[in-house]
Picture 1: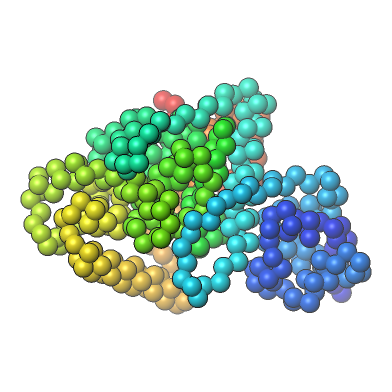
Picture 2: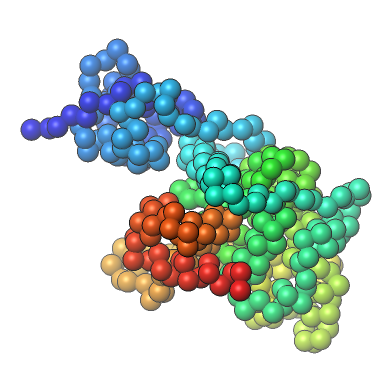
Amino acid sequence: MAVYALINKEVIPYICDKKKVTKEFICEKTKLNRNNIDKWFDVSERSLPTILQAKKIAKCLRIPFAGLYMNTDDIDVKSIPRIVNNRTFDGSLSVDDSGFNLAVCDVLQERAFLIEECLELELPIVPFSAPTCNSNDPVDWANSIRSHYSIDIDDQFRCQSSRKFYLYLRGKLEDRGAFVQCFTGVPIEIVRGFSVYETTLPIIGINDEDRPPAKSFSLIHELVHIIKRESSACNVMYNAKSTRSEEVFCNAVAGELLVPEEALSVVISTEKYKHPYKIENIEIIASKFSVSKEVIIRRLLDCKYINDMEYAAYSEQFRKIIEQEREEQRIARKEGMKSNVYKNVGREAIDRTSPGVCKTLYYGYTEDIYSKRDIAHHLGIAQKHVDKFLLEVSKWNR
């Protein structure tokens, strides 16, 4: 016999309205019957979901199951701010932004957590500081950002991996009062990054599905929006494909900052790379700067080392390589083959979580305010992985 959940039927439509989630999205994610979902949205209807069905809906909406039983006045849901859509889509693509809206709400909630806990634990909140950029030249902007945030090219070359460089950049931005948090559950072609301008802890959201070098590019791209006091959603990075001038400019600044023309010239001449550049040469240069191959070929084009036709050819080669890798991974998953890549869950939690939040959780643990169970619950990881998380964060202030 089915056991029905005696939920407050006002909660589901209330949450969906606040978080801007459609019925179609819930139906797709939960695989529940659309007619039933319509009935559960209708407060006048007596129909109720089973406990299992209600748990699926709560998970989809990213709220605790107990929240479905609460009064709407007692539920704290952050309103989604106005975010300018600077994304570029294929004309045939129909986009339901419910997943993105949920991701924005998650990041807003994490920022609110950091502010509340800093006040309660009497920890300082770093005031946001941004450079003054008076020109419209991407090179001037890149130089100003590098100087203001103390992003040193020698430090960049010393980074042992693109992940280390991403964490280096993220730390520099948070040291000056930005809030950087990864989000999940959204395909990268829908959203790679977003910004929400605030005078305190302005938000840079980065898609956790992206690779570390892509995250670094998105980080600087969204920082430019923040400096311009813009709240924006973006999905096209690396190049000038976008018809939106704002995106072209942000991409240009990010490209120059991550791969300065002067440094690129030195690397090419020192290593004596000859045109046309081999794929292996491009991979070595990308590794040197801890960025993606796509960024390097774009910089080679911008700095006139290659022409448009060569850029298109390189892009097509890299696209095919990525598609082949994804297809191999898909086949491996289908055949039940296990990945040889070791997953460090504690490290992954650090990579997607704001350094400010990580430090606050660590401080709370050392002061016996948070338990390992509290930290595991907040990070969404098993308790057995918390020790590695704490060990890594403990090294930051040494």
